Image (cartoon, rainbow, N blue to C red; front, side, top):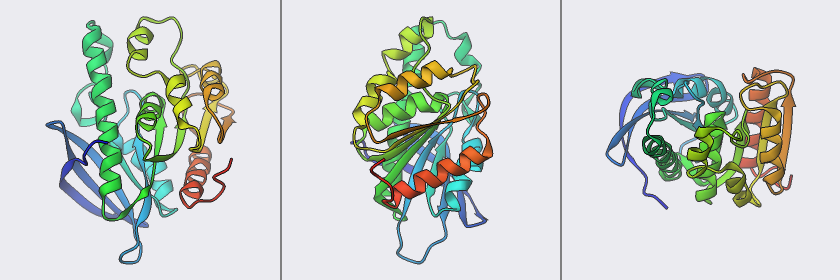
Length: 255
């Protein structure tokens, strides 16, 4: 288990249902911008929480504004960090220009280390139940998220949106699978609820990739499809937030 990172508060604002805080987490000497959202509750009450990992070329605010807001309405806190080379940390297009496999591997390992630190930050936060931390990943964030969850039994439930196995037969896959292997990771989730939500016509994470990952997972698990592409419809965001909030409240944990 990694130790919880220290942080600096940059901004605090009131939002419907709670408070939004912009933080700089310190992870292995690096500064990681993140958005923390805490629901308004009675003094002394601790709430469940979820780590939110965004997709390629996206940023923390996208996750915070979508699923983070949906969770906040359901009394669930969330932490959304900017992944390496994303948000204020650089240009994700630099990833496409990298020719050194060792540098690609370094960035994936860095993202995993920061994800694990995010879990520990939430578990140690005085407003959060340490036994009520989950993880939500979108696209790239699903590859990272399922690996973080496999390495940390403290992650109690998992939602993977537009996620699946890595694509087969690409040069990047050979490098990435040495760091993140989604089917292998998902097998380690036995007993922890998993929800996958995917687009039937997704050209980025194709249905066969989603099916491969889902088949590798043990129960309890569920795969839901939307009739569209890679972008998650708002109705699916709301349904997924409701599913996760119920699991963190201890409802329907058997399936």
